[in-house]
Image (cartoon, rainbow, N blue to C red; front, top):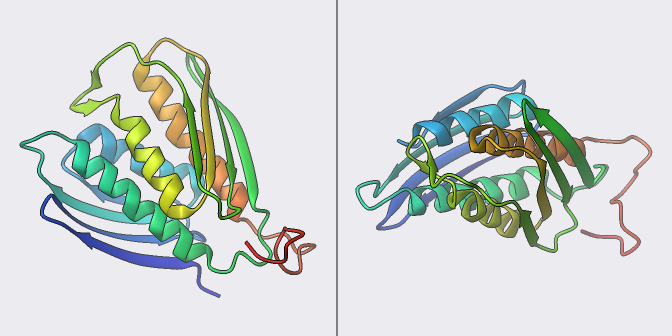
Length: 195
């Protein structure tokens, strides 16, 4: 069974296409026009062992908000579609990931009820041309379109570049665990019988 999805979203503000394969090998090909964001999404693909192609044309003359938020909407939809009926998957995943001074916790539940929590204060307004406030917008969009419960928490760290990169990598590792199959799970991991 192929666990992949192709999503396209076009508005007056953005034009985004994405392909996601949950059973990939970590290949990332990303072009959003925001260099640091591209680097984060390519890291997400690599460390989650997902194959991700994402191209976005957005109104960057305004700022990066619409591009980043809409990329989150597209990625969340791709995760939801690629996960399918969720039969046989672990459903939950978590990771505590270190990156130099940064230590970040990420926990994911693919139970179908969206919720997002970010516990982190950034000290810089931006990293490169990527505004740090957009971290919240991106992950919120992913969690709500994917139907996932997503918690991100900075445990320690002072360098915003390291903290954000640790968040994307921890999310990748937690999601990889959550979508991984366990042969002991015959249906879905829920007493309700569906997710």
